[in-house]
Length: 197
Figure 1 (cartoon, rainbow, N blue to C red):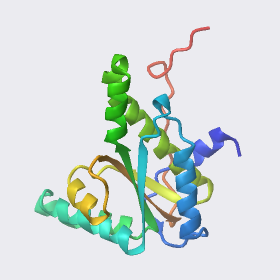
Figure 2: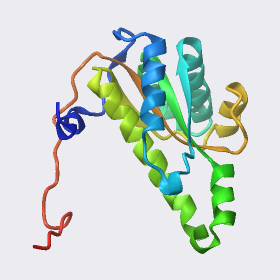
Figure 3: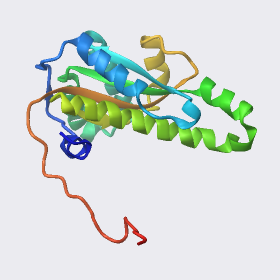
C-alpha cells in the first residue's frame, strides 16, 4: 500500500472496541517506533508519549469525565458521559507530550531562532501524532485524536507520574473498529492550493 493510500485509510474512528489482533507489547512497540522515526526541528526529538492500556486507559478517561462534570452544563452531561464511555471502550490511549526542557535548551543554544522553537515543537508533535495514527490504521486499528487538555493536566501528570516539564498536547484513543467511519469530504479548490508552473 502506498503512503498516500495509508493516509487515505487513516480516519477518525469513534466506535472502538478492545478486540485487536496485536498484543499490547506489539502496539506499544509500533507507537514508539513511529514516534522515533518522526522528524523534528534540529533533530530535537522533543516528542514524548505515555501509552495507557487496561485500567490505566480507563482511569484516564474517568479523570477527564470528572473534570468535565464541573465544566459541562447539566443538560449536556449525559452526552458527555456517553462520549467518555465510547473512549473507554477502546483498547488504549496515547498521551502525546512535548518536553519543554528540550525546547528551552534549544532556545538558549540557538538564540537566533529562539522564538520559533515552540512553534516547531508543535510541528514535531503533529508529525508524531500523524505517524502513530497512520501506523495504527495500517494495522487495522482504529483511532481518533482528542484534545482534552489542559482541563486535568496536573491530575493526569500525578496519576501517571509524568515529568513536570512535559506539556500535554493531545490524546489518541485507539482500538478495534466496531463501525466504519462516515464518508469524508475533502475540499479541493484554489483557496487551499496554489501551483506555480
